[in-house]
Length: 268
Image 1 (cartoon, rainbow, N blue to C red):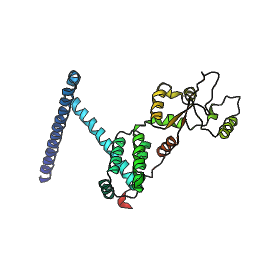
Image 2 (tube, rainbow, N blue to C red):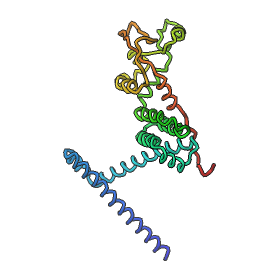
Image 3 (cartoon, helix red, strand yellow):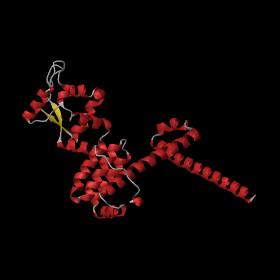
């Protein structure tokens, strides 16, 4: 009898906890909605149609988003400190002693929270590890972290296209080795114009210009007035090609770095 009473009390406690959590969640979303409507009165009609159930669903979605952003940042910081053999406590002290390292940390956390692909998280973690292992590299790693934060999958995809061998574009009747030999003899980088890039990666046709603008503005590719860019009779000749820079190659290397799985630190 006593066990049944205890179970009933426990269920009542759970019910009250759920109701309290629901009220807190509803209050939180109401505050957020009020703030949004105050800033954007034109949204009032749209928000009014959500209703109480919709507000609670929206709160759950936002909670999941916040949790995943924290998880991505946590993963990146833990991976970077582990690679550099720093404990979290040692890392905290290092940030307190070095404002530039704290700036790098801030950039990495911000970029990691918004990252949508694993390679970016690994590249950011590598920047943190490099800075911890060699304090003289902090400024350099701030640059890498800043650029990594700007890149999304399509940027990386286009950047990787510049590493592809131009022999892939050789006409069927030509000898691909001729293109390779020509590049080796000239000592110049392979370069591609927009028409050739369209042949390499047709899927990026409609977004190639803004993608290339980001790569160019951040020193990942460079304009070349001459090089190994090829002209075809079916394409309008273009006099300016683009080639990947050393910095662009380093960024790709970081994105390709495969981190070892994080084990349980207590088991080591």
